[in-house]
Length: 142
Image: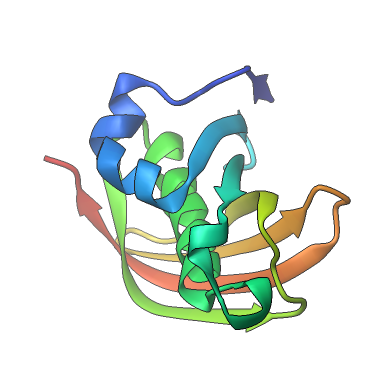
């Protein structure tokens, strides 16, 4: 497994514009294992992302898991392929509060043009807050 203090490189920022990463509250890519395609990304769930009751809006939860799933493909293919979501399913298991959260994702199965991805969001205690799956079409990054 490749471990680093910060895997956010110019290439990964080009794959997902810096403004998008900032908008989602990306702190860093913590780790990426090329053999298993497993990635772990840290996000800051800000109070500004919350609706009533201090609960993070579900679109941010979905975005964090989706971004991790996309990065697992982009890094595994060395920036050659990007997944275009055909379908995403998110299951919310526990409400998300402001603070640090960790999105993990991996490629479950990859074909020539279609990829099946899985991911999850965890809090600092390692509790799973949400799980996701995605069916994606693989396209060449230009």
